[in-house]
Image (tube, rainbow, N blue to C red):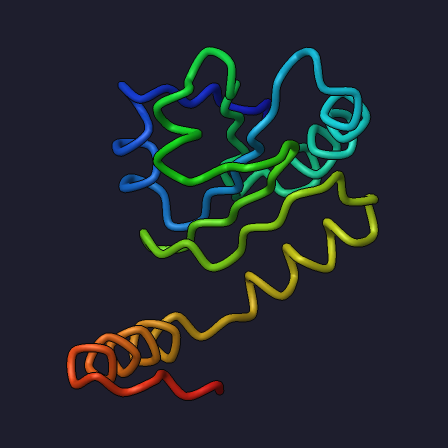
Length: 131
């Protein structure tokens, strides 16, 4: 499967309609982005059950701003409408595969509960506990 181009028009629908979306924030002028592209495309071919998407930060400045993208490439993983990973930098193939494996292994019920706990603590003026 090839990658999907995300825009502000289709972003919400693609992320909502799919349980596991990897997003590569990139730009054509970015050397590390161009180096990461074949690694990302290769992973998309190896994991046809996942959605691999790209956001051109030049064309989609509002999306990049909404996610506070400071440097590119930045890889983000969204599972069940929860951003579970975001990291700038071009990952080597082995590291990308490791991140995908870790993201697949997450218990999303536990992730959602920890978000609820952190939100409850914040609303009570407490500092969130590190898990």
